[in-house]
Amino acid sequence: MSLPTAERLLKVKETIRRLESRYQRPVGSVRLLAVSKKKSVREITLAANAGQRDFGESYLQEALEKIALMKQQDLNWHFIGPIQKNKTRQIAKHFSWVHSIERLIVAERLSTQRPDHLPPLQVCLQVNIDQESSKSGIQCEQIPSLASALEGLPNLKLRGLMAIPRQSNDIIHQRLHFAQLRVLLEQLNRSGFRLDTLSMGMSGDLEAAIAEGATMVRIGTAIFGTRTTK
Ligand SMILES: *Cc1c(COP(=O)(O)O)cnc(C)c1O
Image (cartoon, rainbow, N blue to C red; front, side, top):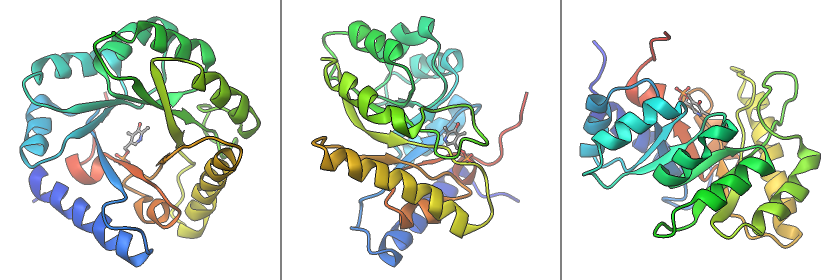
């Protein structure tokens, strides 16, 4: 009944291209992060064989097992889940990107623990743009000081902002939240930062995110199907 992974991936890529054009975004300006949490190496391999390079994971132990098994393939792993202080060493060692920075101590440890032979870890600050729902992410007022502190860390490269807004089926509401994140990034850039990444948009709010300037969308369900919760 459901389409194979490679076909769903292709459909998501086509949707992204269509939305780029509908909202006057440059072709190729939205990068697709395939969120593979709770999905098997077999399923990730199907997507990788279909050309997907960027994969997002939220649970460290599970991610490390998959990364080890898929070492031969040249993939970029993005950490998008909450980070405990004692997990930073493995994240610094095995990931290219971290989207979920919320605390300076975590950022400092990631920078210190980043192995010398790897390029700087690419990071985003996770922002709580609608306080009501999620407990994750920093408040808007905290962004400038944390961003400045991160700029001083040698083995991190601050790329931009990430958010997971409250779920809504209303594209107007979705766009309002994403527009807030875009404005926050613009404010940082006006004050001297040079940030190029808005990590926003999931399977249910992809269109709103692209309309408001997402440069990286994090898509799980639309590529891999629904996740079975443990
Ligand atoms: C699970 C997850 C996604 C993907 O969500 P879908 O609705 O399955 O597309 C995106 N971002 C984060 C941070 C996630 O944890």
